[in-house]
Amino acid sequence: MKGSSNGELPTFSFRHMLRETIKKVIAHKYPNVQTLGKSNIDCLVDKVMYDMYIGKMRGDISLTELIESIDATISGSAFQKLLIQNIAVKLGFVPFLGILFQSINHKENRPFKNAPAPPVNAQKLLLIFLNKEDRQTIPGDLEEEFHTVIFPKHGERFALRWYWWQAFRSIWQRFCSRLVKWAAVAWFGKVAAWLTSKLGS
Amino acid sequence: MTIRREINDKTGRDVSIGAVYTTLERMENKGFVSSRIGEPTPERGGRAKKYFRVEAPGLKALRNSKDTLTCMWKGITLAGGIT
Image (cartoon, rainbow over all chains, first blue to last red; front, top):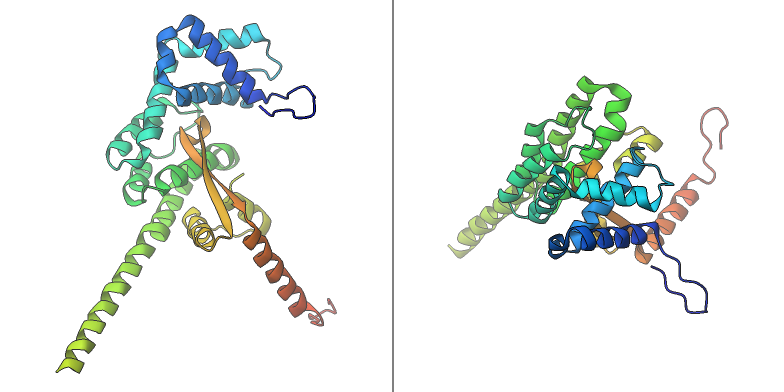
């Protein structure tokens, strides 16, 4: 929400209004869910906004329809999926445990149910070899491009091959370049030790 | 639109996402850009997005680089009479 200092009416962002509506619906119908916190509500906001983005939900939806939609999302398995997603995001920075939850998250929260999912093994490789900062961003960028650009443009076979190729390239760039650096440092260390021993004797 | 896709569309070069992040990491260490982690979105499989912003030293370096290139191109004539 943007405040007003010169007497004008305050302006509300769509996201803010959506969040407030969701909070009210949850407080009214699911009082025990309130304790789940802000990030879960943000997950719901993302879900509703994403439904609007892919055309599953209209942009000029009425408040009653919106409340019904939120209600449908919260109840049943959809909300559990959102919780898994949220846990996966929170644990994304924890090695191994994060990988496990991200695999479950990937299965449960595929945004395009009829489209192929990116290869799971390639995603696991990325999660194993990338460092904790990259574990969220690189697989996320690749998955977004896979769904929105590569698959619609080139089809399933090309998209799957493309994902594997990008995964290998990213691992090479981010993991192996570090490995080369460490090897170089170790080699210089050995050379320095050899020189010191020669000068000493 | 990811930075990688933008480079691909504008230049036709297929750079790896790892190379893009390595470059951005170096630029961030130099203070040219700053980054923040965004909210997780469903189209990314519930993963968060990283947003980058060009900072004042980055803009200055960009202007310097552009001016240098413009100076170098002045007076150069390519085959076919293109100046």
